[in-house]
Amino acid sequence: YVSSSLVFRKKTATACAFAKQGRGLIKVNGQPIENIEPECLRLKAFEPVLILGQDKFANLDIRIRVKGGGMTAQIYAIRSAIAKSIVAYYAKYVDESSKNELRATLMAYDRNLLVADPRRREPKKYGGRGARARFQKSYR
Image (cartoon, rainbow, N blue to C red; front, side):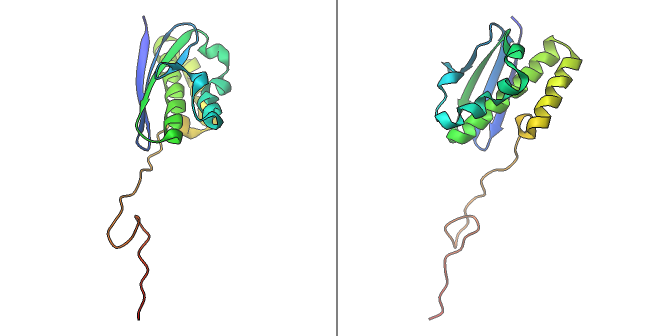
């Protein structure tokens, strides 16, 4: 039983991935990845698999737990967790050169697959209805 685990965040969504030897299953919160909602963002979650090719995932299972955030943030956290977990798995159990190859392929496609996006929500301040917007002023 060989496995590697990782945590990935996008905004307030947190995805925790476990990669182990298996037969190519990817599950999100116990459901197969094919059932991800919303449907329009399903391809986003598949991206790492489509970029690297199904053969790379053929002999490993990835289990992902995701919580917090909204739908979109969760899906971005899932896709990053998949990408990072396969790179970590290859680094630990396969070899360095194939890991670097995977890394380069993913980086060339989208840097956010492997590097966290540091942007967070800015807190609201008084005197307005948001972080930057202020209430209107009238001199009458």
